Length: 258
Image (cartoon, rainbow, N blue to C red):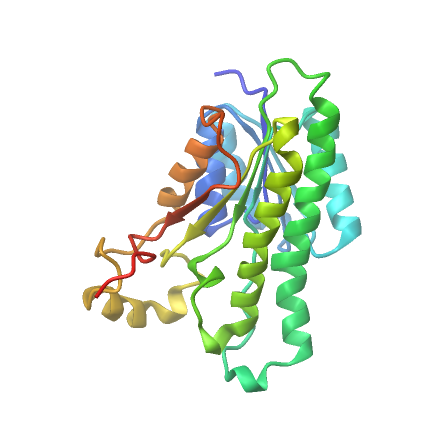
């Protein structure tokens, strides 16, 4: 398989992001990503991309920092020459869960800085690149996919910062979808439910119990592969009359039940 198209998947060293990146690599994408860890943190991902016949790029930095974002896009274009897909996956949880009445400004700023501000400006930068490429890259079908959460609409008072950030991503998705629709750049949102990753490891027993008690109509944990499958569908270019769509990959959690 010849890998020409390029996807930028933020936070792809592990968890949901890695699942997405590996699926896209298997479908012909070169992969660029950014993370806060050392280069060694991405070795597994890059090896997987190479095994699929593609090339990978890891940039150390934070999507919350403007200079890091600028360097990421510059290095991606220098390495691959194009950007076909942005998957805004990178996100953090509060360093400590606690009472909503005890949330500090520092915690709110940190979570919103990565999850909302970082996601917003990543989408903005990608959109500018995609708009410029429309008239120069043949058979160009760009897209932007934001990974939010069921926390976009579900109250969790022990991590209010996270809920606020994901609700903001929902509106950012609608705004960019509206702005870019006439230019042929669809923007989508995926809302994962309870997904088995290292981020949810600290509450594994809790969710094991809740799933057993009927939390979701589909009675199991979600996996990064479930999210990757949704990304694959949205990135396929086959949904030509669709933008701003939300995919709930949550085992049916969003269904209101009596």
